[in-house]
Image (tube, rainbow, N blue to C red):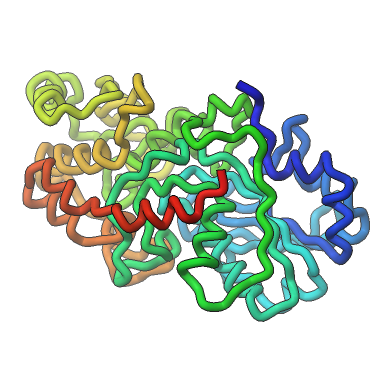
Length: 395
């Protein structure tokens, strides 16, 4: 299987393509905006466009991808080496202002997504598309792999009343698209105002690929996704952001381990959890009982009992279902020691974070009422979405 070439690789190797971008250039990028030679996109853009490369934009977690938490904003500044402005799109605004966009003819977006609805880079993308619709600015997406493949989709569709910066569009938790496909679906289905859009496709990427199949190096797209394996568990463990449970932030295995100080993992697993998993026939993973010590964020400096999610068959693993199961079982095991996190969350000051993450209140009620796992099927009506995805696919 040949190594995947990203949109950035395609652009940097094609002089004729570069010449089609005649005006001033800006780039939305982060820590994972790296080409196949381990060179950051900014260095390549300086090489390709010289003084016409005039601005940098960073998404949530910052251009440097070093800011940990939700609603922790990053500042605008002048880059000390490149001597051009770096604008934060996770600051007092998540939409680029007219001033930020002034003088730009071509706005490139090179962000590594993780294939999950609550990951905010796809909304930075669609907000940019909407802002540029009335401007003479071409938006170019340098496409990158969906690390959890482009075939499997999973989870409920976002309900409109739960729209937020972790859910702007009616897509499932595991959406099966690349960044380029999200941009195309946005233009085709989610907006009436069209933008000058171009997607520079990858070469050799196949929809069935997980990230390790691409033979590309993994770079952190956000501070707590240190391994490509973490992207596979993310649609499960991100649900815990809406609770007082630890999703492993503050450890070296963030978003792969889950727990709480009041859990005794071995007895919980032997006496209950293993039987539940066996009875509902969820496959492709093992929950390994363990203890861990978060050094920051939730349950900081408290020993937590819990589990590491080990994926043993990625094709069979269903992270959204596993995440909902974990919430249900932990909720009833912990009783009064379990709490739903209170607002604010991602600039929403009224609705419960878990409902924003789920894109619905129905799943919270499913957890609280200890309802049957088969009921999840009723939340997962994806027929129309799959048709839309098929019409949007570019690979």
